[in-house]
Amino acid sequence: MTIALTLQEFLDWENIEYTVLQHPYTISSLSTAEAAHIPPHQLAKSVVLVDDFGFIMVVVPATQHVDIARLGKMYGRRFQLANEDEIAELFYDCEEGAVPALGEAYGFDVLVDEALENYSDIYIEGGDHRALIQVPGNTFHQLMAHAEHGDFSIHPCHNK
Image (cartoon, rainbow, N blue to C red; front, top):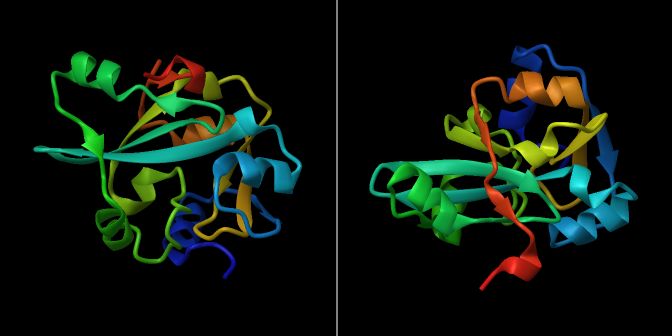
């Protein structure tokens, strides 16, 4: 597999120039960054949440976790992590655990962490465990133009 067809079609439709970086098979964002020899804080990780209103994607650096409690307070909602079956159905052309951080391509509202705003390059899962998409930081901002930006993450050592 190269990159997910939905992702490729979305990037082509948006006329986005990108580079596909191949790397050895990995199962976590941090191991992907290491295998691809990229800074982990520049790897945009997607987390899919669900509540009574539906699904939402939160995009944070691979070095961070989504602060679900803070999001719930900010939006007055009761978010929880989407389960693997839901994610597999929503991202039907992606391998389990390799969801691209471009929710708009799949029709989702997106929240993007402001920690991703100041980098020259951003890397995004390509839909499998062997490919990343590299885009310039300004292109990433263009792709996130419809997303809400804010402080949505927490460092893992601050988790409960």
